[in-house]
Length: 519
Ligand code: ADP
Image 1: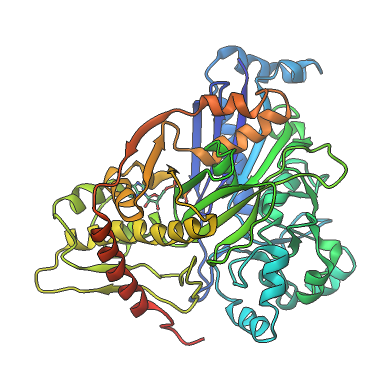
Image 2: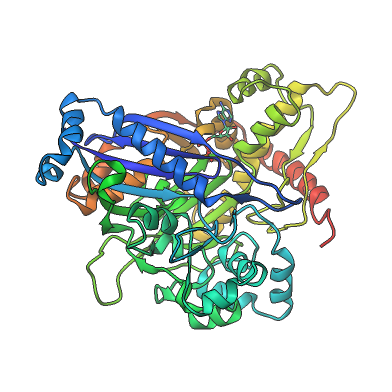
């Protein structure tokens, strides 16, 4: 028996999972780590803790490997060099929270500051400045991204300008920048490999979607010295091997992709027009648009999905996606639990919400961290509207679930408009997609058939698939597509008129939450 080890470094936890040849999870370990909020709107992680938790869960996961023979081969590793060939882990695939920015010292391997997390809004003012100077169009054309503090470029510029001595060191080539994938590969190879894959690179706002290279004009605009950048590699392909001391033997690192692109791959959305929505902390909908980047007319992002042909020397082909990002998805339910304390665990939300037939016209706009697609309003804030004396926590819980589905419905609408045709089905995954009521709301509000597969850990699965393809663990995308199995299908049950009325109320509520804080 052999397996693929997926490292899934998320926003709130580091996870490791082992997948077998059938694409089933055979072992799984996760560990949360600290969220650091130094000021309102700022979100940081300690990159050293990201690495230590990730290594820890990987080690624990290997200990949980089902077959005893596997354990023996780990123990026997020092006895002979040939163990690597009998080692039960064929390759490692990495997937990660995207955009989060780490800057570290190449010599010491230590970060020069905390990582600035994708949710961090500290550079919103810098983005406004760039917009006023007229750079929005050029940035969108080259990167496919909306000029927003969400992406890495302004975060990296902030670190270079605000960490004492950073810029001078960077100019001398002494610092390395990376998103979390780069940081993990650097540590797994003990500083010998500094790379990022195309999908992660495409979220930095420094990467040209069309040439698949770092872009000098963008580097100039954000004042980023080229010497800090990682080499860009394909999403599927061996980039190096782990240092043998870390996990028992040198294991090939063979797949890298940002979490949402990995989930799209894990949902085997291999054909243009296929789309998935992941319901995790945020909700992220991606649609495969094939081998050409499609410019959105409806405020979606254009992004690289993945690139498989690692060895292609001439203009490597990538698969592109359109993406919509909702910042508060399952995190809205965490807020019911931790902020309002009206539920004890996330799973409680479904029975509570189902105890009332509707929200009683209550709407929650969970713009706690601004709003993403299609509003792109960093100054929006949360709003709870329409309450009366009859409003109970059940109505609020139901409104919270509806808010997740309604925000995703907005993204779905933008995607259908960009695609120029109604999408036939939406594949779903992520922790909150377990919630049947939420999935039914999604089918109702989007007027689309929602399809939930058996394996909901599509993100880790996608990373495993990318790595497994590179080392021949799986032979082809067709083989992967055949592994995908349906758990449950949700059909729309409300009429087009009811849907229209519901969305109209929602848009009215969203209007109330917009532009709330001053820039
Ligand atoms: P991430 O990968 O972003 O950490 P997960 O895919 O693990 O997220 O999903 C966890 C999220 O799903 C949490 O925000 C949690 O509140 C939410 N969640 C978990 N179970 C449910 C449920 N039954 N109903 C609604 N939301 C849920």
